Image 1 (cartoon, helix red, strand yellow):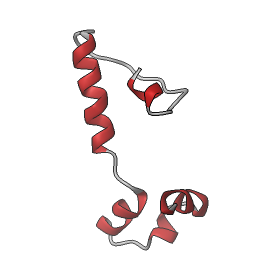
Image 2 (cartoon, rainbow, N blue to C red):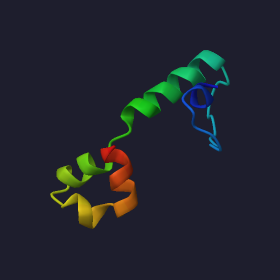
Image 3 (cartoon, rainbow, N blue to C red):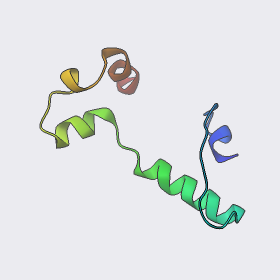
Image 4 (tube, rainbow, N blue to C red):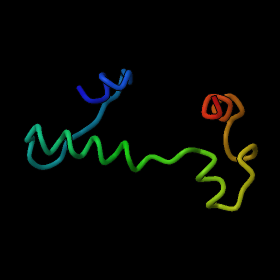
Length: 63
C-alpha cells in the first residue's frame, strides 16, 4: 500500500519474520529511505556517473 501511494507498481517482495503490518510498513519505509541516487553511488565509488549509469536513467534523475 505504501508503494502504491507513492505511484510505484509491479513490486514483489518477501517478508521474513512476523507478518505484523506495522513492522512491514516500517521496513518498507526504511528500505525506501536507504535508496541512493545513481550519481551518489558513482561518486562514492570514484566513478564518472556517465560510465556507471545508463544515460536514460541519469536523465530521469536529473529532471
